[in-house]
Length: 274
Image (cartoon, rainbow, N blue to C red):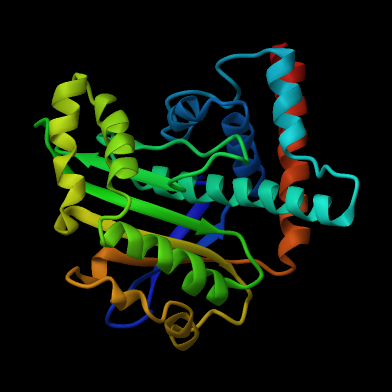
């Protein structure tokens, strides 16, 4: 059973909507635990049912650091709030990555979730290569926001970032990440760099915004309001503008429960493998 489901839902004539839901909370926590151990590529094999659950590498320090990432740190309320936002942001980024991975092919190469909260740059990137030829056929740029204010985040941050990409203001970062992923397909550095040229072409590019929302954002009308302005990314099709939502009641409480379930999975993995 897949940890998460992704269902196509209506938004409007400009945006393709996806609604995510947790199918198996325990399964989700186990996958995130493996990612938190720095082993996202092993998690791919687990998602594809090619490996059993558990880490590929086991070390006490790996487990200590992974558990630490699930904890809220800081002396003041403000410090604890920042720590919580970073932790929950990582968890949501993992959810976004798992959803994309579940529906991708063996020729899809994806940027791993950030395991360091200070990491800057792209939230996520997926490169799709031709099934047989050394040619890139598509690139998806991800922006994932775990927030109590999804409209504000979409308008003030996601659209700004996507707009910069669309106006070719982040070319170097995009190319560098694309080359790194394309190399995983077996091309050498120069070949991968040449293959990455298509990432600069808007016709090969898809944008996917993912946001946590309350239960009230469950209709096409509310989703249309949430993603208003997406059509400002001009000269692309509806399919190239994706708006994904995860409905979560009591956002911070839910993510705290998820973090605790991840810690539980890590402790069990450590008991079994160290």
